[in-house]
Length: 119
Image (cartoon, rainbow, N blue to C red; front, side, top):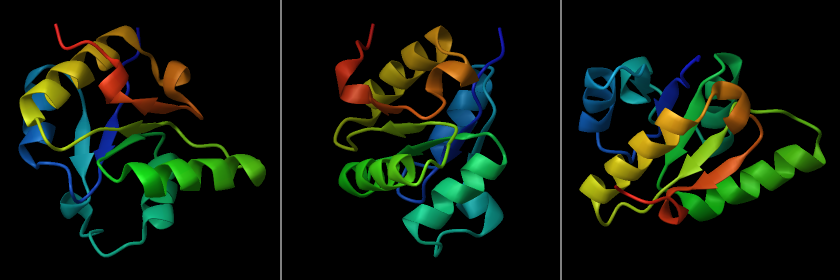
């Protein structure tokens, strides 16, 4: 099964990328590409061009961007939205999602990690 690749928005903890790689996932950050100053829509476009799902804590903006892209019939590789209040719980939920998902499962979807269990 092909694993999703993640692109971490600038507000996501940088250690997530290293921790994901230790668990066998490919992950990249905005800092890695000096993209911190790109607007959110451009961040999603950057990830989409590479077929990477985007992970962000910016739930309201990216949820709105998703709906704008749907109205424009634009596809993306997936948007994963999380709360930044409990990084350990967020990371466990992210691992569960990634373990059970393929890139096709995430395509054009918005996933709220708060809905996932953190076993």
